[in-house]
Length: 174
Image (cartoon, rainbow, N blue to C red):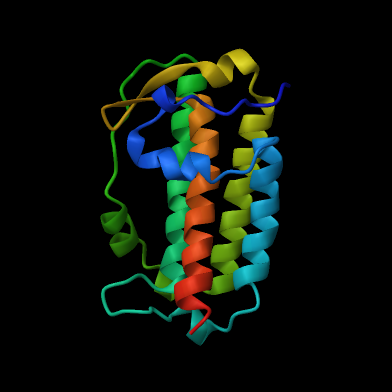
């Protein structure tokens, strides 16, 4: 299909502006693929004790961050699928803290969480690779805010980039 173009500022909530701006120019699906390799390199060699590390008592563990990235990506991809297919049904928001609290990521191994992220990311890449330019420009509503399918590709990439930076700076540099 065709390369997904960067969305305009009117295609996503202002909250996501930094995520979208942080995605490098070029094919967003290639960015998404590279991020999967980079995140695996970042956390793949950590031991389980390090996976349970949190830099402050009220912050998520490394495992919870990885699980959060995966859960959120699933939601972004689901939204993009529905919107790209012309489904105009408004899509609900979600409470990220509740999702993490109810997922029990700490009971799973880092390797398992990383495998799940890779599988979800591969599905995300396949979804956006198959989208036509027209499908990617379709817009809908998520969490009561207009959003386009292509914006969701950039938001997913920016979201991972945001959390990978936090992992490097606050979790793995300690």
